[in-house]
Image (cartoon, rainbow, N blue to C red; front, side):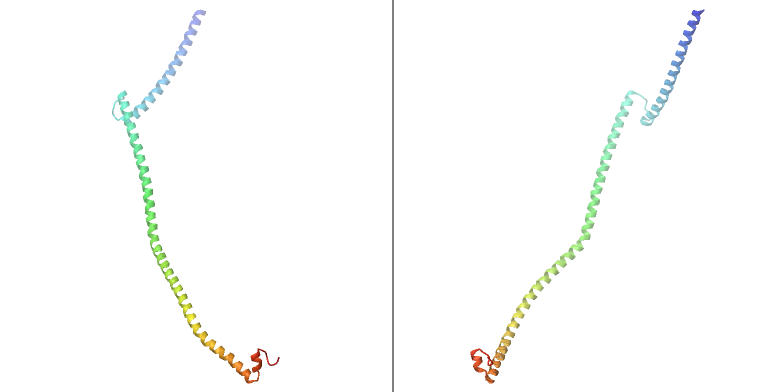
Length: 176
């Protein structure tokens, strides 16, 4: 009976181990079925009604690579278009600034030309003023010099009339 109990205990232990292993296999199977269902849904969304085969998988991989390449090319084209748009925007702004500067530049040129004319007129006026002043002063100086000489001569004559003639001739004053 002890042997039978030992055998029974071994069988119960073996059965418990198998039950544990069976439960583990069932859990793994359920997880695998869920994963398979997910993959099947992904396959259906990616491949449509095409059957799941190795060739179909390779064909799908090729299509995905081609689609990714097209997306990369499209991204590059969009980036180039944005860069082009930025350059065009800068050109437009520059053209507007140049258009806004055109009247200012024209006004500056007119003012510069007016300033140059004013400087030439100022120089001509100064030269004419100097020439006219010299001519007038020259004529005036001839008259003034003659008057000054007469006035000086009148003083000498007045002194002579007063009896100071001898002192004048000697260069001394009569009261000396």
